[in-house]
Length: 196
Image (cartoon, rainbow, N blue to C red; front, side):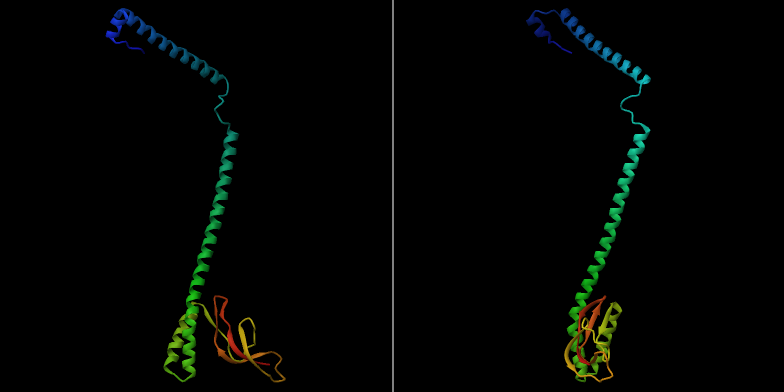
C-alpha cells in the first residue's frame, strides 16, 4: 500500500480526495488478487477431492520405507554388537598383556630367591613360596621339572648327557633356571640339562 505524505500531495498538486481514491484502488487490487488466489486454491481443493493428491504416499510405499529402515537398524545393531565384542576382547588382551609384563619384570626377583635358596638361605624360602603362590593364582605356571619329557618349545637345552639304553625319549635331568608360562604363552623357557 502506498502512503503519500500530505506535504508531498501539495507539492505534486494532488488533492487529498484523489490520494484517497488511489489508496482505495490499490487496496482493492490487493484484495482482488487474494480472492483470485483463494478461488484458484478452492478449485485445486475441489479437484483434489475427486483425484488423488500428488503429495500423498501410498500404503505400499510406507511399508517399503519401514522395511528399509528396519533393515538399516538391524545392520547397525549387528555392527555395534560386533564392535562391543571386539572391544571387550581387545580390553581383555590388553589386561593380560599388561599383567604379563609385570610378571616378566618380577622374574629376576624369583631368580634371586631361587639362587638364595640354593645357597642355603632358609629365610627366603617362605618369601619365594608366597610370591609364587600369589602369581600362580593369577595364572602363572612353572615350567621345567626334573624327569619331565624334553620339549624344545618350553625348554632351552644348555647341556646334554648320554642316557640309559632303556630311555627312548630325552628327559630333563637338571633344571638350571626355572621357566614360566603366563596365560598360555611362554614368558621364559626353562634352562635345563637334557639326558638321552
